[in-house]
Length: 419
Image (cartoon, rainbow, N blue to C red; front, side, top):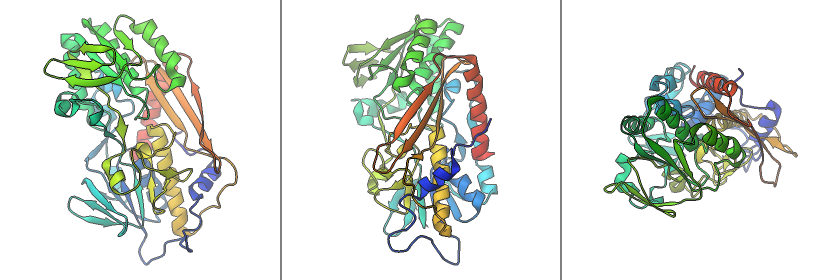
């Protein structure tokens, strides 16, 4: 299975160059005795897409800033959370990145000094000529009263390695039974199908283990998100898990009381034994502190260049465009930005396109059982002066073919990033 995520290479090269062919006053290239410095913040799907593209060409001095020692995939990790696969199936080492010549800084970013072109970490300041930000998401804890105080007992699990704590909650529920609450916030948030996927796979384990109780799926939306997958998601819920999942659409969670183990919602109080509350999300604080956006980073399409700074690119789930917040889109935008930066370095950036330009392809999988899934493909394009146009192609129902393809896709993508 091909893992190339850059459709129509010429168009994407043009895309990366829109607004970049000339940097203000003739800065179309960066010349110095040493290689230009590119700092990439975030070692997830987007950051690794950028790093691999930059290292393959060899035209830049690349630094990856990532606090974790290794990589853990969020896509497909519901199979670990529900107890079907070990965590090791979704983890990889950054050894290949080291071998290819990137400098890897295992620290957290504490600030970005755009005036000095420096990334500030806990111990050092990293100068850059170009900066690629792919820091993922943070949770809007103030969206649910009482959540901040209960954080340790209510892990969200939408960031790498947080899945471990959610898995512990699931294991306890499967052993003890009771009410297990899973919530879905209003978009935009990372991987919209994920709350439903988690509910499905946990419900499958309930059936296999004979767990007494139910999953209460509280959805702030009137239908499963994104809307094009609503019908196959609802069909899977009804046909397979009618006895295990109680679906509550258009319900907002207002407060959590861990002492009483009770949620205050727009539909009344709901008691629970265990809960996986998936909070509203936004870009991490570094985006706001650097003046790059508010809830999400403000970027130009198709380049993913910051609207505030021509030397900064924001990709992955932190960027604020209508594109899906998915791993595949993040990796594709990372590759695209790497090509744009290399074009600027060499002074060979392609001329802007006058017509519509393809944006990174989105491929996603919503598992309904451990062996069956719904495939979701999203193609998108943008024309100058227009909003992006998205087209969804979705399996009409869950099937084994898509379940097997999801595994092949994951293995191929992880190899492309870290193999």
